[in-house]
Length: 340
Ligand SMILES: Cc1ncc(COP(=O)(O)O)c(C=O)c1O
Image 1: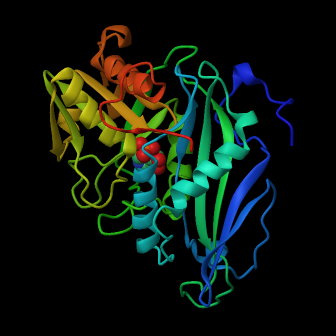
Image 2: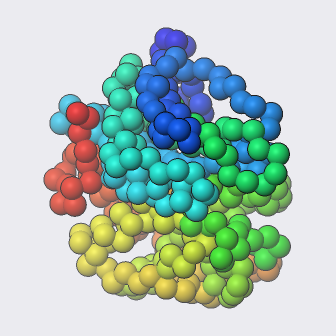
C-alpha cells in the first residue's frame, strides 16, 4: 500500500490503509506467540467467535508524533499497556507478557513511518486490539485470541482552530452501569452510544454527556472523552469510581494543571449544577487532546460559556500538553518515549 493517495493536508479521523499491522496469537497450549508484521488487510474469523457473538474484545488508542527535535515519539505508552492489561483482565482475555505491548507498537510504527504525518499535518494513530477468536456457542471465554495493531494517519485538530462543542446531558440513556465494564476499554461500551449520539446530533448538538447510573445528580463522561470543569482556581473531574474510563489525557491534564498552572485539582463527584455553573468545561481524549464546551443543555435549560477560547485556561492546558508531545518544551514527567 502506498501513501500517495492520501490527502496529507486534509487528514481527518479516518482509517487509511497502511503498509503493515502486527499480529500475535494465543492458544491454551502455546500462550501468546508473535506472528509479527503482516500486510495490512482483512481478518478472517469463525462465525462462532466470541468477539462476534458476545463482544469479547478490547482496544486501545494512542499516537506517534514527529517532534521539533526531529524524532518520532510515542506518548505515555506504558499507561496504554497497563490499561490494556486491566481491560483484558475484566474481559477474560489472557494478559500479554510485560513489555510485549510497547515493543509491538514500536515495531508497527517503525514499519509504517511513510504514513506518519508531519507535526503540522497530524500524527499516526495507533489502534491495538485483542479479541476472542475461537468458536464458542455458549457464553464462555474463548480458548484462542488475537492481538492486532494497526495504524493510520490522522489530522491535527488545531490547524483550522478549535470549535467549541454544543453539548447536552442526557437523562434518557446511561453509557454503562456503575459496577459493569465502564472502566475497561471494552468494545461493547461503544455501540450502545451510537443511538444516543445520533439522536442528539439530529437535534443539532455536537456531544453527549452521560450521568452516573447510580446517582443521576453526578456526571460520568462523554462517549469517548472525560470531562473537566474549572471554577475559579479549582479544576474538577469525576473520580475513577468504576464507570469511567481512566483516560490518559485526563491524567495528563491533572498533572499539567497543577504543575504548570497551580490549579487545585479535585477528583470526586461532579454534579450537574457544578458543571452548568463552571467558568470553563472541556473534554479530554487522545484523538483531540482537549476540546472546549461552548454550551451545555440539560432538561431544556442551556448554559453558554462566555470564556473566549483564546483567553481560556482550557487553551493553555491544551497547548502545554501538545508542546510536550511535540517536544517543543522539556517534558518534566518522562511521558515522551522516542522510537527505539
Ligand atoms: C469512554 C472513553 N472515555 C475517555 C477516553 C479518553 O481516554 P484517553 O485520554 O486515554 O484517550 C476515551 C478514549 O480513549 C474513551 O473511549
